[in-house]
Image (tube, rainbow, N blue to C red):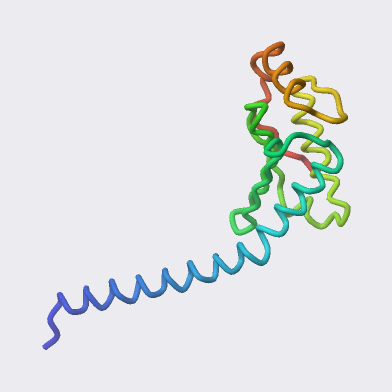
Length: 138
C-alpha cells in the first residue's frame, strides 16, 4: 500500500520541477525577446527625445501583454501599449507616441532635455495631468 505522505511529497517535487522548467523558459524568453525589444525602444526614445541618462525606461513583458514606457524623472505613471495592436510596426511609432505623450503631460518642449528642464517642469507644474496612465488605442 502507498503511503499518502509519499504521494504528497512526489507531487510537491513534480510541481517544483515543473516550475523550475517554466522559470527557465521565461528567463530565456526575457533574454531573447523582452529585453532586446525594451532596449531597442529605449534607444529610439533617446534618439527622438534626447535626455539625461535614466530619463527614459521601457518595460516589455509580452507574456503578460504589457509594454510600458516611463519617464521616471518626471514621476508620472506609465504609457501602456497593447502589444497585439502595435508591435508589428517596424518603425516603432508607438514608442515615439508614448514618449511624446509623457512629455506633454508636463508640458515639456521637445528637444534636448537636460536636468534643469526636467526639474523646472516638475517644480512649475507640480502634479501631472490627471491622465496618470494612458493606454494606446488602435
